[in-house]
Length: 266
Image 1 (cartoon, rainbow, N blue to C red):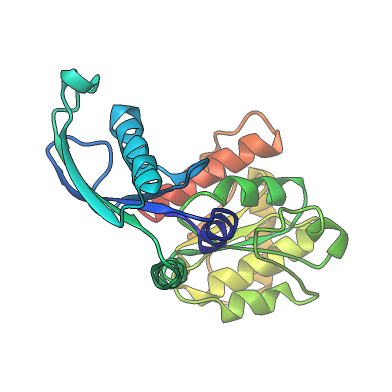
Image 2: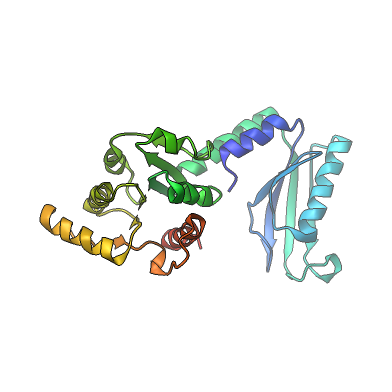
């Protein structure tokens, strides 16, 4: 899925654009029906699967731009004759975009983003920023939250972020089925946020950075402060407890994989 902000930037910077859509994909094919990409005279955005299929589609799109054609279609068997052994059959539709169609596509992209699983990352330190960066191209709607404006300022500006002294309010207001990844600079705050997320009992994922010792400390604190609340739904250590390398990017990769499995997008 191409994010609306990325699509907007492409539309603004490229004067003429052809949209390539996989109309039909039969048998073994690199991408399914509905997959799209966009091609200009000098750039491209997205992919329909790479290889000779994509190479020929891009060439056809640029020929359209040269000729001034509005629309064309072609079908292609994915066999040895084009250097691909998929064995399927793909039909493509190529359309020159006008202003109306661009607006419609941006609206569709925005609506699709609204339906994405919500992932709230609490803590914009090294691990939080690495996780946000790693999740950015994946099918999630991200929220990076911290009380420290200086840390938020270091994050990718394309990622939605929020500076707030009350991060627990973000958990209370989150939609059902959200994921909460707790990575703050303060263990006591981690405990408070983990408890807030567990109290909801409707989160798809509640993960907290830490060790088995930290988890045990949280469980003891919860028994003292929250009657009838268990930590059964808590993932801690995050990343399946398999992380030996403590580089932020490594931790982020394991957690990203964990979230993809949870939301069935693996």
